Image 1 (cartoon, rainbow, N blue to C red):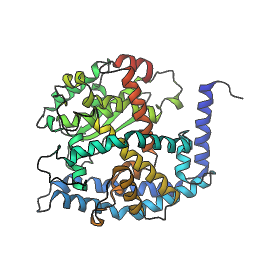
Image 2 (image 1 turned 30 degrees about the vertical axis):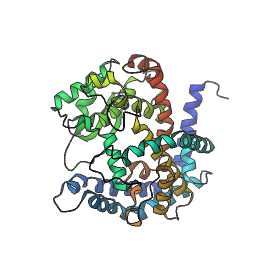
Image 3 (image 1 turned 30 degrees about the horizontal axis):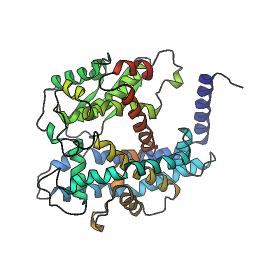
Image 4 (image 1 turned 90 degrees about the vertical axis):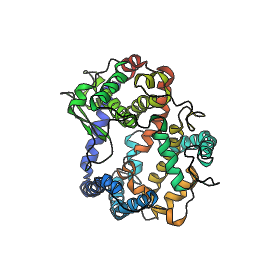
Length: 400
């Protein structure tokens, strides 16, 4: 019997990895790699696609862009079936069940939390959408009693990129100095990470942002992004820097196999930091950003993005679970059924595009949306105990 809890966790991790390797995932992983290659080849064209000169409206462009990804649907279904087949060899009903078991998350617990979050956020989300229906986000919107896909996307963009921060641009040096000022409250130093990273905009780069650990022992942590030095870019950059600084803060005596922070806690830390852009006057002041008290979305909700994000997570989790349970069903029909249930979106048949195929978090099939659901709850607790710029205590008590 192994009594030491740390040694037991190490052994369990090694044993699960051994079973996984013994199971031989070659076919599934080949299909996974092939799907991601094709997915990112399309993503590389995004900037050229949307910046091309033609007479199409934004809605027409968006529809055509989504349909570009529909060609990957068969690859996605084939990958899911291959992963399911391998997971059954390990005694699981499907791959989603296997992924949650690896995360030590009970499926019944997920369902219970989804029901509670749905109940808690439903009315707030309805009220948030009323700001859109009332033309609060865009005075040029034609008022109506129903949220169209165009207006939904507009509202989401206005929350992510508040008009209060329009035209706030910097030099690259100014931008990084401001990001450094943001993290200095916790005695963090971002410059070693920045020097090794690739963050600045290039037309042929993909627009996603990532953190990756190249080498723990050499403390080689890097960020990939594709941003311009403007106010709207602080959100993805601070999120990824938070991941990198989390890894950088892990104690050297932590056993090697346990050095990777738990994925849920890692996302909670990143959400804790990036949400301060929208919720903390102190941190907004450090970055020279105007407050959002009079913004039509933020004046009634401290963080409307969080409400929107949670509702989308509920849909995405139910979608991912369902496609692994039944990979032969109509994914698009499922997607819009869940979109109606959780986001109250009921577009015309012509607007029911395969949006799910454009989501890296769904294509990756690693249960990331579940991580985010739990992470939002942890981030709220971190904010309660470590408000505004109280980063030092968080660093000492959580990150290490």
